[in-house]
Image (tube, rainbow, N blue to C red; front, top):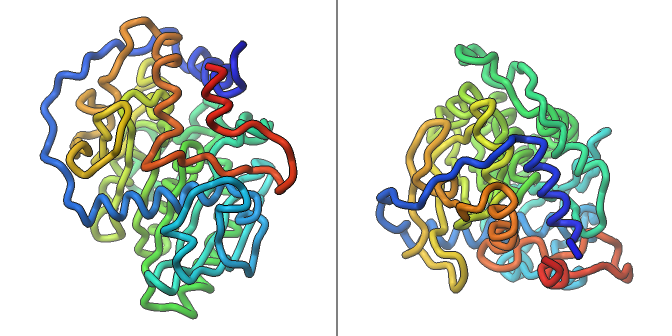
Length: 339
């Protein structure tokens, strides 16, 4: 029996390409990241995970917590936080929150990833809307392809900005010295990247942290996001070993790509430490990190061996329940057991 996670990713793979690129993991990497950067990756993975919790995306005015939903975010829960805006935005029903962290002097925008456990049809439609549309996200830096962006992610980011932009502005008005961060896992990472781009375009400095983020476009948007750092904030795109989702939609056909650097967790299982996170530099597409991993068994083989890694970023990142407390749904571990 296949889980909803496996069936969903299979559909996305088969609708994005005829075959997966077959690369081996053989490139050299830069040295391990500093401990301070590793600590930031851990912290913001928990912020990304917190967006899966029903109470947090429906908890305006409350303190963030993951415990009731079965999640794990002690670095978030131990801080003095307040949700200034929770939302389900537009036709895409993009979910997330804007929160203030007085302990660490942060304003965090966090987006929920694809809600596979409650099978949110709006999320799945967003992911599977694979056409690219020309946009004005890149300003005048649209020299190659008209700043084409994945249509589903583009619509989700536009829905979200109506809520997020004024919420961030209001939070900054009260806390002018606080750092703004955008984060998310999976679909949430894609929307976070585009939201950070829009906020930066309006003059706000935003640090971006994404985990298991899929491709959002091709040359112009990838290069543009890359060019915004460091002046308008840092880009921190984290991938885990053979996670299938950052490879989607497949690079060919269409020249789908990513912004860099990529921070590649180069172990499949075990404790993730600074020593096994490598910095991959590139432009649009590089096989030196996650893109270069392969089962050598074709796209279905890549899905089977690569879906489990998508759930593990400094812990079980998507373990918090997206449904109201008391609703019986399968846990992430139960989902994995069905693979």
